[in-house]
Image (cartoon, rainbow, N blue to C red; front, side, top):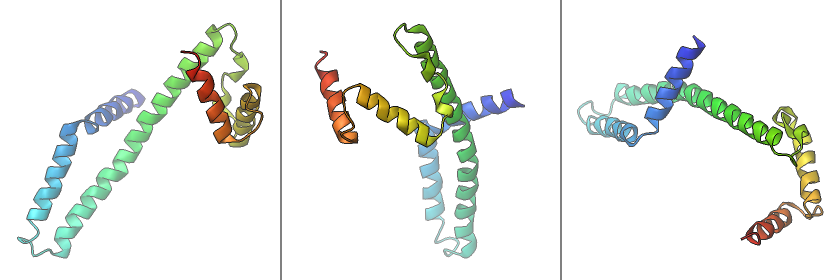
Amino acid sequence: MDRLFTWFASMISFASGQPLAFVLALGTIIVWAVTGPVFAFSDTWQLVINTGTTIVTFLMVFLIQNSTNRDAAAMQAKLDELLRAVGKARAEFIGIEHLSEKQLEEIRSALEKEAGAKGRGDRAAAGESLKKLLSRR
């Protein structure tokens, strides 16, 4: 069941990100709008588009979240492998995505201080990092 859902979610996520999917959705809206006068802009006519878009949106949330979760897990595994493989990297960082928001903020602040930002705030730390990165060229 898990493999089937993963395959299905991947296929739908890929297909929904294509230009053709947008054109089909836009075409559906145009057909719906053009048929408005035919159905005298009735409540049923409005209910058709409202129900259809609600159902599609509801289902797409779960499919896209599944794809996002898999992508994030794959990215974490790749980063963990880099931390493990690079000699100067600190292996203690492997798995920190499971920490609380507060703990992650403490780690980020400590890293900024270690990098020379000296706790001058987010903008100062970003500016300092940008200067260092640009000077490497």
